[in-house]
Amino acid sequence: MIKHLAQLVLMSSALIALQSQAKTHLYDGDGGETWTKKLKAGDELVIPNGTYADLKINAYGKGDAQNPITVRAETPGGVVLTGESWLRYWGYYIVVEGFDFQNVKPSTFDGKIRPLIANRRAGSSSEKSKDMCHGCVLQRIRIDNEAPEASSEEYKWVEVYGYENFIRYNYFGAKKSASRVLQVQLKHANAEGIPARHRIFGNYFASRNVGQSVGNGGEALLVGDSKMQHVDAQVLVEGNLFFDASITGEPEVISNKSSSNVYRHNTIRETSAGLTLRHGDRNTVEYNWVLQAGKEGGSGIRVIGDDNVVVNNYMDGVAGGGKSAVYRTALGIVAGYSKKDDDANINGYQPSEGNILSFNTVVASAQPVMLSTWYDRKELSMTRPPLNTSFTHNLVYQNGVAPVEADWVRGLAISADFTPESDYGNQYGKDTAEFYPTYDQVAENLTDGQVSSLLAPGTVVQPELALYACDAFGTGDLVYDAVNGVGADLSKMRAPLLWTEERKSPRLGPDWLNPNWATQTSGYTACEQAPSLNSTNGVVDESVH
Image (cartoon, rainbow, N blue to C red):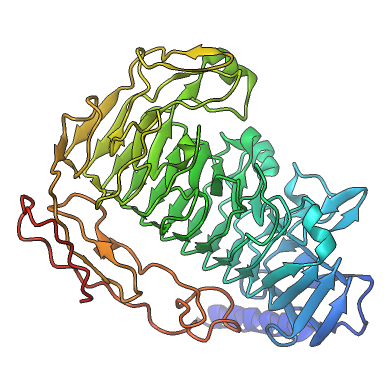
């Protein structure tokens, strides 16, 4: 007993000694310089309140879980960084918080354009984690607006490296320039064979459509890249709001290009893009809201790859796109390239097999559900439709919205039309499917529209189907409950996220910008179901319960 007591006293003394050695480092400059500090566990690096132009902050060191290193503004939101300012932090257990980036533009290092924020030492190897962050946190940051000259550049605002880092409660505003707002980089995870396991949650990605339209590269969030599609990343993206957050012309607001990631409880609103599993396998997409309100070019959830699970998601008002815009579907899987073209193009469309799409709700969408689709890729051939898809318990309710008559939809609410007899082609020639799409299971789906003959078995068609909508979460969003176990179970979903002048959702964005940050999330109240699926009145009750 005495021995154990002595050990406890020694441990307590060591902890007190460590805490007493912790220092506060106070910046005393006016900006226009690179300030680099090596820090120890428990140290704080504090920037006094004020506006600083072209201040490059480099912080590194080894904190621990009990005594992290902190890099912060004197008060949250009180430090404004402008111009070519940046934040770099690397090491272990570093918390970076409270900074406000305004009127920003990218800077260069070693001849390369660099992001505003990165948890890696500038110029270090991207394939070795030595100079990256482990267990670090970026939180309560705002980046908003760019200097006019930045709009013509192509650069990222935030790059995430290392392992088990948190990106949470940040505000990412009007990025006018091309390239991503936030990208998870995975070369080191690939080289070292370790899952990244980052957590990205509670962030608000605001409107980007104040800049020029781009054809590609305008995503809000990219996890990996085409060459990293087979990396087992294990990144969790949860509880984020994306509002008009993709530059017009870019079809993906969230682009997944790695494997074994989870996208859960996110809300996409009025965005001319959707959530796309562009590359990768074994990803999970669950409990997400895609509320597009007829936004031109808006899409829902698109799947490419193997063994992905898309379950209990809600898509409403997907407007789709123009010619060859098959990627604007509310819920769908695209055909893969021919083996020759797939082998030659790592950034192409891989064949898709073993995907599960279940308990999803699609409402009033012009391009509703497309489970085997071709579109014009010019000289590249798309010949391999999806195999062994499971499509069960999905509610596809058009509510009077007619699906588009384009080849890939053909006026169907649930289509799967890329088959060996399909007549698709372009100036380079005709594409013919090598085989029919196949299905492990098609069962207990419900729609008020027309269905492809391939999916008719297992799908109930009720042209006069009447459902009741209500404001089930008190957010002003009229939503439809599941019907007899078909469709998204709203009781398992969190309230759709909001960020307006009148209302901001709890635990979203920085607390210094969100007066409702610590309030309670509104609960779920079930809608009243229609008395009969055979009702002929076609009435939709939009009263608020």
